Length: 174
Image (tube, rainbow, N blue to C red):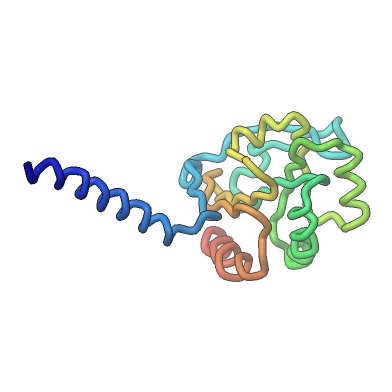
C-alpha cells in the first residue's frame, strides 16, 4: 500500500531535479555538433562578382573566421562596427551573405564599410544549412586543417572577441 504513494512522490522529485537543473543553464548557449569536425566544404560565388568563387579549399593551411550575416539582420548591423575594427587588426575574417538579395548586401557593405576579405554569396541558404545556421549572425573559427574550433552564436561582442576568439586565433596560428 505504501508503495502506491511512494512511486508518484519519487517521480515528482526526479522531475523537480531536472527542472531545477534547467534553471542554471544558459538558453543562449547551444552546443554545435560541428565543433571539432571538418568545416563543411563549399564553393560559392563572390558577392558582387559572380564570375569569381570562394571555397573552403582556398583556406586550407590558414586559420580564419567565417561570419554569416544578412542585410535584413538587425543584430548583424549591431556587430558590424566591431567587424570593421577587426579588419584593421588583420583578423582573417570572411563573410557569408546568408539568404540575402545581392544588391541589398552590397549596399550595406558600401554604407557601413566592408570588414571582409571576401564575402561568399549564399543566396539560397544551402551553405548555411550545412553549417547549422539557424539565425544570423553566427561566426565560426576554423583551423589550418579545416576543423571548426569555435562557434559564436549571435553578434560578436568586444568581450567575446577579447576573451574567446582572439586567444583561440593566437593559439591555432602558433
